[in-house]
Length: 373
Image: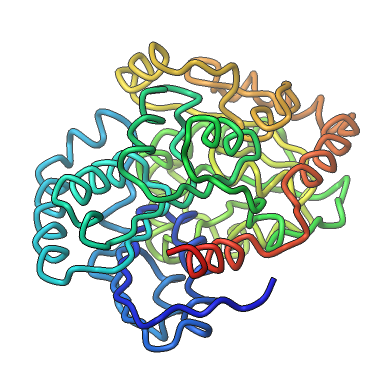
């Protein structure tokens, strides 16, 4: 695909989670180089900051990474204050392009406000990278996407067909994780990788269970620190919720560091997809507050929570949710997977083929935006 140029514009980007920060940085790595003279303001993290030559975010990830009904309610005053400040800024700055990246609930409210305030009528374009999970719950969101966005760029292949049929501009360019995540050489006698999540609320729930599971399994293990936590903070969290003062050699950084692992225990989320693309057999565990789970259970309409299972539409990776997320059950399943991981290994190859369109998805998104907006 040829390089598409864009005239000088004011571009605002918002990523509220670590995975969105990576996507935002991949988008920016291209646009900063090929769209000279554009002015950027963003909410996000370290990766997007690096892509912009060290520019600081208006609001950093540490103030944004929340999930769950109870967790959001507990921080509602701060969230509302942030929203008010953002609306005031956008009213004064008047951006040409707003790039919303994942962070579904917040970005949907922002898209509605931008539309209702007639920004889009006056020329502002709004795109959403990563489709809200309308297929899992709140199917009415698909109507909001049509009303409040100029284009949606889904990362899962089945989403594009549904969105297009609803009259939403939603081309599919593949999943960016395919380009940045390469298979590792699987070590059958290697260590257990523990990926308890990238948000505080996930770590609180998962660290104790994941640690007890590792002890029961009885093989060497390492924690995988997400990029949105620095070394000191992550070690303090591990100590607080496991009761153990771990050494640095027991912690690796990011899913890029799974070489030498034989198996993994992963909290549901983007990390499950990246672990699968690495070719690491794994089990999914997930716990949240009882009220969040109760509300979600009454709303969610899909059979799985793991992205691998959802994309392939079958249970490839075992899921241990809420009460079943305990050390005994998970340990037994990890042993089974260790003894025979061929089904998962074959499925991970199928997964990669579905997501890989032999391009760079974020470059394709950027070129599409430049050519059409």
